Length: 540
Image: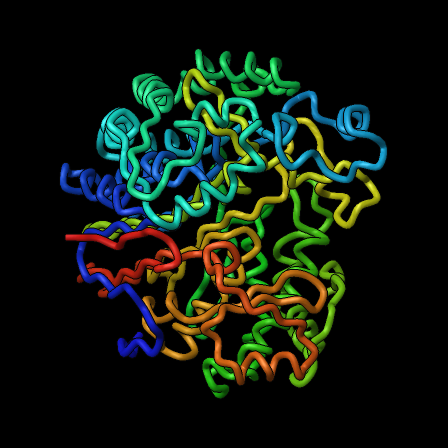
């Protein structure tokens, strides 16, 4: 790809060019990854070290009680890892209706009854055992050091930390862990988390056993019982991360790979499959025609995803059916180029997250994402080991007559998931590991930035810096304030209900991009990091 490196957008970042690279949403996490590469580790070692560090430096978005997914190129082929959590054995629709009433539609948003078995730690262990070079204990040492010594709070994380405090300050363990001095830390103040250092050390020394079969699992069971939950150490002992085969969609001669359901990555593939039927490059990059077309394609994708995607064992359609070219061509014909629409699902049977990326000079590339879901997840923090627990259980339905019956809660089942890493190949060779974090913004960000790179030859950093839109529901979209006023007016004239938003962190996600230069030999990488977070792209 011959990128145009003249960036037309206001940016505080420049692309990084190096042979060994790490791109994350916090500088200390990027440096932790680089330490592993300097010590002779590979991209997987770097990713684990960075991910562990981010549980401390960006606790609004992830913690030791997170879930995770990964797509990696090992030098010869792609691998996918699903380290998302499963429902406790006690969880049934009757369990939630008994506790919360017959009218309840989902598990609660916060509290212990929103917590599925966290999978991130199991994901770190699985990646290390299969692909890592350095001892697992070494990979967590940077995070342990930071938990013990502390770090100075950066601007973006502090803003979100303070914003989450009023809702969560009374949740079990939250104030003890995240409100030193009885309040959120201020920018530049030192935050220390000695309980998490204890938890990390136990995880490191036992290669994860303490978390799933030992003292941490026992502590979480006791904490859960104390605060009205039902998750047990046995639920933890029964958990396993799962190696999966990524699903894919061709676009403009390249192939985008995503983790299969129960994640929403298939939404990006559907949208691109629809756009493949249009001459997107013939439209002005930031003009209303291009943006309208992409929005409508994304709406069609979400209509199917919200209807059909769940734990694949419960789905009544397959990803192959949802991605069938003739089906997507038919969906593309529904788009009116001059009018916004509210689409329903088709019938394919007939036809608070962090993202990071690493790569090394031997060609290994890692696309990794982990999350507590909403800001600080469940709000519950086991205090002895500093385990900040996700709230992924809120993604289940407890109503068999709901929009997506396949997503009905059941013991051992995975809920619908929002976090998705992405990977791009061309002719079977690696091109880019990338991701854009932020709830349902993630597939939208995958599509928007990839269209900019492949249809308009914008560089990864320019595609990262460009203004974004976010589809919500019905005819409602949010757009960043940097999008031109003419384009906003044009979208409104076509029937889109547009809200212009200044808070980019909250609505438009943040990405990390590593584009490989050279094949078959690695000449280096072009790396971008999103200015919407406190991040850093770094390399040597």
